[in-house]
Length: 105
Image 1: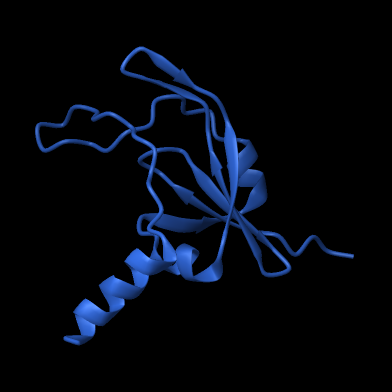
Image 2: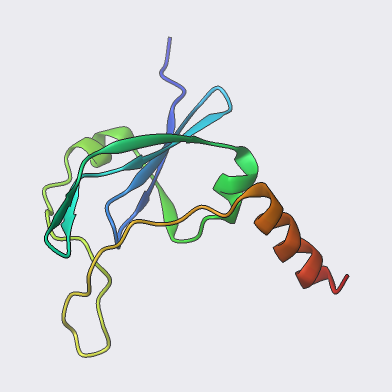
């Protein structure tokens, strides 16, 4: 039987999301930020949180495991590499407030 896991990657940070049977997992890769080591961390997220995240594009599993690039970070306007930072997830209350604000309520 085929593996029905879907993947999305953030090319600026290298972090990726996997989805299997409706359960989403945000995988934060290990990295050094400001001289501090941040280990790999897997966080279970809801579908609403997944939909609110920006910058993640679909990727096939074989492409995900074969990525050799070790420097992640956005390309700045001067062409240099920026610093990759971990993303922060909005809470359900913050996401609700954002939706209400966008609706003008």
